[in-house]
Every structure is written in C-alpha cells, then in structure tokens.
Length: 84
Figure 1 (cartoon, rainbow, N blue to C red):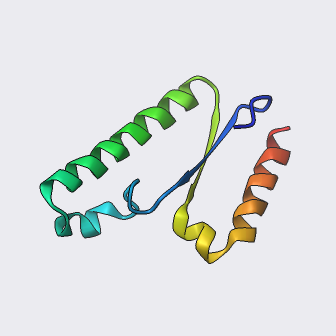
Figure 2 (figure 1 turned 60 degrees about the vertical axis):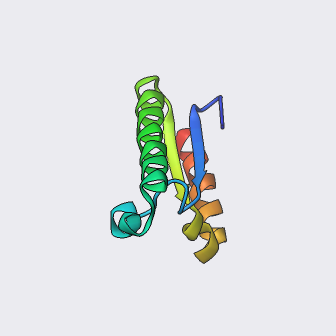
C-alpha cells in the first residue's frame, strides 16, 4: 500500500485467486470450486470498493512474478512515479 498516492498493490496466487479459473474449475471438488469462486467474488468486491473510494489498484499474478520479476518491479515503480 502506498497511502500518499492511494495505490494498493495486490500479488495474487494463481490457484487461490483463480487465474483462468473457468478453464480448470471442473477439475476440483465442489468444495474447492466454491472456495475459489468466493475468493474471486471477494477480490472483485474489494477492488470495486477501493476504486470507488479513490484508490488505484494494481493486481499482479503469481505467474507474472515467476516469469518476469524485474518487469513486475518496474511496473510498480512506473505506477508510483505516474501517480506522484
């Protein structure tokens, strides 16, 4: 969280936050389908609430960090600089 510029950065795990969930949801038990669907719904509510309250939200996925960590760092730095 960068309070002064009202930026919230989320780093979401691919499994727990459902990256491309519709493609693999059928492989899970109903319990886990419901859990991840609830996580995704909560994420959407929180992002909407933050934006409504004037915050900028930056969402970074686990696989993006694994593939190109420096690019993700650059994205955060550029976003902070743009919002200053």
